Image (cartoon, rainbow, N blue to C red; front, side, top):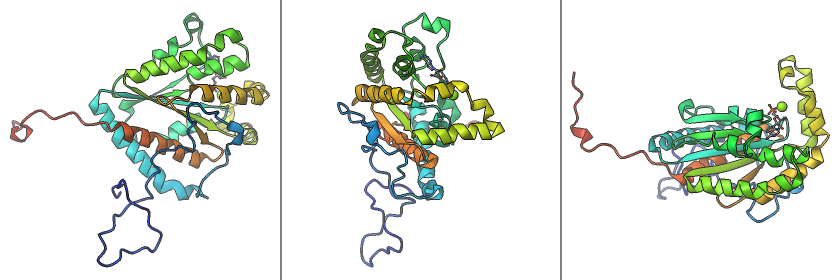
Length: 302
Ligand code: AMP
Ligand code: MG
């Protein structure tokens, strides 16, 4: 794969270097945009979920149109992760939230292929146990925060405590209302301790959820994923949209931004997530530790 060069400009098909011009830099794919401001929820601004299009695929029409860029992004993630692991100074926490069938599992599978499993761990959060409920709501998440060198992925997260908990009134409003601030404090504290957070809301439409639930009914190999509870949750669709709107608006911060990923089209969703993670890691610029002195004089005994 050709090296990506920072300021290389993508050339159209058929472009040829002009004789005498400086040698043209060859890139495998158009370089990624520096980050994804258009999908980021700007801190202090409303998330405006209703104005976003979950069908968005930018300039791409088919899965094969993104294959090269997705491969490049995965390779960047793998290379940067190797450095992060070796550097052993900082860590990354990726938060994935979505409505049921939104594609959290598929994203993990599609984006983290090729990453060294030793440096990456997935934590899935279900309804809390009795022991977890007996602690403050952040307790179980804090235990799963990545140590230095590691990337941890939260498949559902502390945000459930202002999403499902709010929608189903599992605690009084006076309790969940204070949690947005608690979450921001928690994330600020993590950031100060060397954790880089990146949070994704995979946005699907109500109609796309219907199709995916139907697919789970139609395909016996997907029956295990179907829960009648999903229908009860689906009935509260609007309440969930409101809860997501509030969580993303109140908790997208300069130190821990939220990204709203168009997720009706799975391959585009994977591309956006992969590129955003690659760009986040690149901005951290993890470095291999310095070698011991005089390695060039070392000989390995027979
Ligand atoms: P799934 O991800 O399909 O395995 O479902 C996990 C379930 O756990 C979902 O219905 C979530 O709403 C629920 N869940 C996750 N976190 C919490 C929480 N903090 N409080 C209550 N329910 C939760
Ligand atoms: Mg489920």
